[in-house]
Length: 286
Image (cartoon, rainbow, N blue to C red; front, side):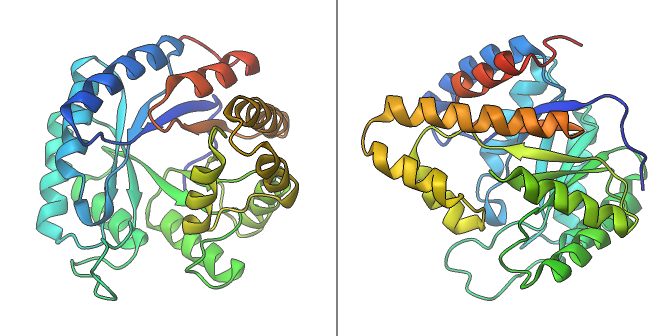
């Protein structure tokens, strides 16, 4: 296990667009986001590799701009030979950081996983076997525990296996209850887990979208936040202003409590994340 990093890591996440028009729009958003010099941009990888082409295109453009990039690498449905090919491809691009995940099943696959990996710890172990210490490996963590794990204890055991397999750091699922994060950190420390665990931050800009995401991934929206958002109805301006204040206060408490950075789920929009970045006074250069 790696020691805690002395310098906080502030990073941003993107998802690959599905059309050329959206790709051009994303390039503009990235250019704007990059003005604050985040440590890196991560790029998601769709269920079963469904966005592989878009992920490659987005990662390649980021690297062409000299931007540090961390591609997501999901193992569900992927044979070892394919993962090894991806690792070599990313090494050739000068990439030194990966986000290693189990990933989701593509719709229609039912219970069949396919591929040679079942869990993220197996992927982490494989990356270490094939590439040694070339890549800094980030993995996922769940302060409110993954809905498929059954119990918090089982989820923590799963997380510990990823750390023992060679993970350098972790990024959490988003949450809006700082106490859940700090309680999770205490439980990790009690288990001897000492890697940096960076909170994942989701700006609140759209209530129905947030509710849909949260129901799917198991992230809890506290009742008082849900009620306030419901009360705004179709008033997007009020939703965004309230959401900004909620997330701003959450970030402040996390930073004050010693969180080793923040990882923003930008949803490919620069405005909400940049406003948080600036009001938090986060560093804007290397």
